[in-house]
Length: 139
Length: 116
Picture 1 (cartoon, each protein chain N blue to C red):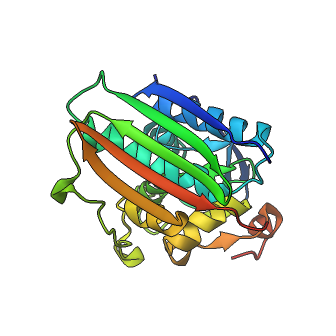
Picture 2 (picture 1 turned 45 degrees about the horizontal axis):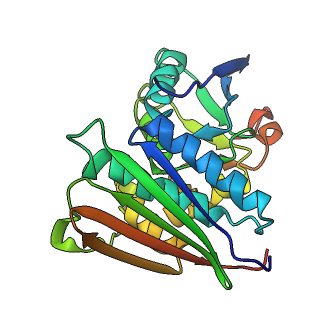
C-alpha cells in the first residue's frame, strides 16, 4: 500500500444515501487494494444508521461526513454529524438483545463494538465525531 | 424513495421458496422487504424458506426485517433461511439469531421432500 491515502465523503442523512456512501467506501478501499474486511461495511452501516435514526431523528435535512484514512496498521473511519449528542456524552456499551425474545433491532452498538478494533467519540463544537479503527486482518 | 428489492417465489408441494434478488437487505430496504414478505406469506398454510443466496450484506435493520417477517407468519407456520453467504451468516452468528431460525446450508436440502 505504501503511500498514505485519505478520502472524504458526504451524504444526506437518509437510508438510501447511506447505502450509496457505503458502496463508494467499499469501492474506494478496493481501489486502494485494501484486503476486503466485511467488518468495516457492517460497523460503518450501523453507525450511519444510528445517525439517521437517532442523532437526526428530528432533522431530515441533516448531513453526514465520512473521513477515510489508510493507516500503516489498518483503516480509520471518522463519521461527523451535527445532530443531537450521544446520550451521556459517550458511546453506548451496547448489549445483544436475547435471541429468544425475537428482537427486531437493538443490535447496532454491540455489532459496532464487535467489528471495530478502536472506537472513540467526541462532541466537538456542536458536532458528533465518531472514529472507528479497523486493524488489518489476514484473510 | 426506498431501495428497490424484488422478491420472487417458487412453490413446491408443501413449501414456498422466496428468492431475494437484491444483494442487500439494509435499512433502505427493510420496510419494503417486510411488506413484500407479508404479501407472500400471509395466507400460507405450509412452510416458507427464504433463499438468501444473492444477499451479500445485511445490517441490523435487515436482520430486524427478517425477524419481523418470521413473526408475521400465520400461526404455526415456519419461515426457514437457506444459502447464507459468509457476511450474512456472520451477522446471524454475532447476534446469536442463528439460534432462532432453521438454517439450511443450501436450497436443495430445504426443498428435499424430507428436509424438515
